Image 1: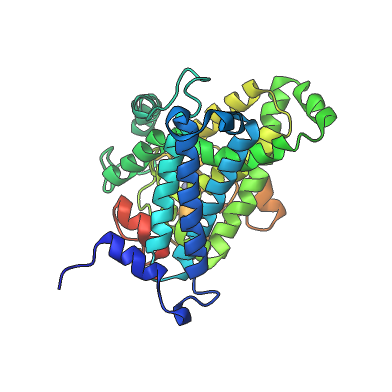
Image 2 (image 1 turned 90 degrees about the vertical axis):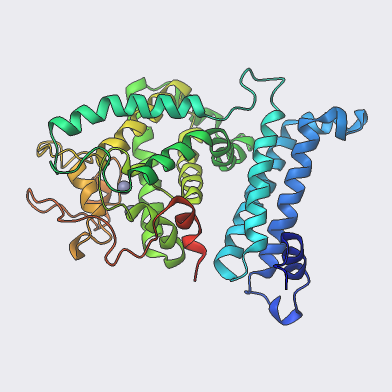
Length: 376
Ligand SMILES: [Zn+2]
Ligand SMILES: [Zn+2]
């Protein structure tokens, strides 16, 4: 017998028996995700090529700011439902199709702004090269000069996988930003607390940057903790923890969907409280290098700074394989949050002996790791 085609598989899943469509089976969320993603694709095509797809009378609707917001909401809802389907249902064809279509819709939606923005659609290939070269130029010499593990080489095991993570998040920077900005944009559309925002905007730049660090780390702390404590979420975050070597490139290893959720949630305080865009840009630059730094293979003794800010030793303990390192040090900037909420772990001067998850359950390779959270 021939292998069923994609279309046949999709159709048989859509027409599956009533007893396999029960609530909680993941069928309904898969169906809705599929419909949402088709709608998102259709709407973004209409907006991107208005001359082809829409009647002139309807064009003002598609140019209205609320339309963009609605389209984003449809895409985010489709994504969330697809996720639910992937977690609940062994047959993942609806969820995976919906994710694929939503990502395509995200790309196409970029065409919609071609007339208004200079950049239009771009894949971040230049961004990737710039990223790796700049970060590498900074960290490779530091890691060579002050290594924690002297025997670890630049091209250590699994370096290609981690570089590929770097590559994906750089290439997809526009889609990622588009999806991650959706919750913050929705809040901003409500247009509340103008006075409060003006007051924040008027603060000195340094204060604004520190406040952004503080607020984003606070929400990051609880999201990160949830990713550890909720089993279905842990399967996504386990990808980040599967790294057996720590260096400046290891931090890039993160499941694509976790990246979207993490950026989406931290974007809320960053973009809704009224901060000056310059302060946000400064912060983004800081967090970019900072996360490479706390993962780096750097054995610096930073005793004086350890009580106040996250250091490589602080985050290395978060990645430790040993028992004492499980579910500790969730903060990215301020260990204060771990102290306050009882998850702080910093033994005098010691470093973890090994990194990763005991038993190393996560498979190797980008696509295997992408599918890992959805496998039973
Ligand atoms: Zn973690
Ligand atoms: Zn990490």
